[in-house]
Amino acid sequence: REPVSFQVRKGEILGLFGLVGAGRTELFRLLSGLERASAGSLELGGEPLQLRSPRDAIAAGVLLCPEDRKKEGIIPLSSVAENINIS
Image (cartoon, rainbow, N blue to C red; front, side, top):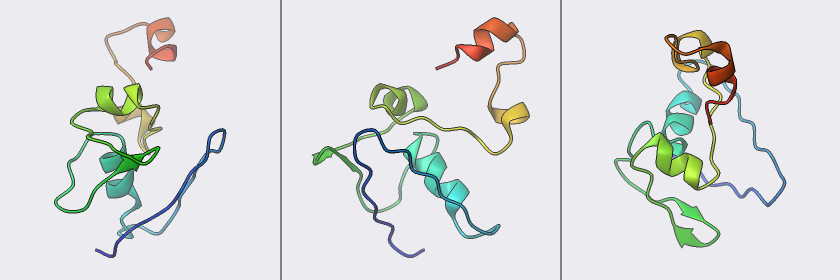
């Protein structure tokens, strides 16, 4: 894969799109703590960022709205009210 680099400033929202196989899903899973990088590094505010889990990403202010929200974006055994407040 090619290196990826971008900056997002306070108050901005970053959205990426691409064709199937372009790597966008893998990038977002990495940024949300669902997958670990095999190389490279992440920084937030100029400081190294270690994302070992989605909890780490959420604590850092990074959230993911998954492609398949029915499969990956809800907790099926929880109520609608609990799912609305998942983060």
